[in-house]
Amino acid sequence: SPLGPCARGSPGAPGTATDVSRGDHVHPAASAFIGARGWDGGGGTTVATAAATNLSFDTMTFDDAAFATGGAPWTLLNIPTGKAGTYIVGAWIEWDASALGTTRELTVDSQSGPIAKVWEPPSAAGLLAQSAHGIMRLAAGDYVQIQAYHDAGVNRTVTLRGFWLGKVG
Image (cartoon, rainbow, N blue to C red; front, side, top):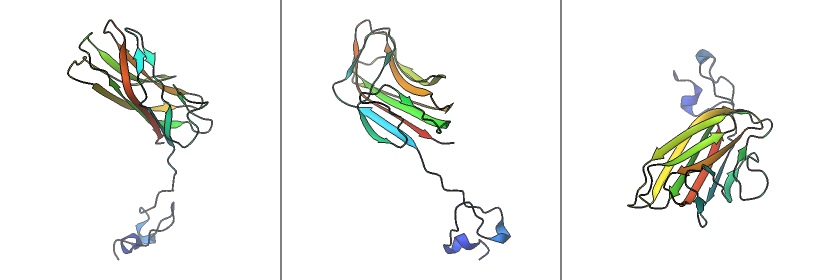
């Protein structure tokens, strides 16, 4: 076949060329994805006005490399020894309905600085959902966390939240 063995269903071993005449056709070496995903949907968390609040989560959907250390509830995902690299990190939260104040913010933060941030005006029409995600190089020992902030003048509630990261390089 002019397209090489792969076109005939012979995939070849990872990291090896399958057709000498097509030396550019190399199967990438297999790599295992590592990441973690946590969430919390129980009861909500009070966020005081004008104070960035670290949000916790109590359930890990998966955790491939012990990013969440210690017992629940967790507020940080830590980068373990040997797992430094480039990560996609994200979070989502849902605020209670309120038209008070001028902003509600979600920040995905790291020891090295902010990864992503989103802000929106409050809404009395219903729950306000926010999500933020970004990419950052993280070293072993670094951590990531999610923070909520608002300026409503009274306490507000984050009713649901989720948090995830995945190593991409």
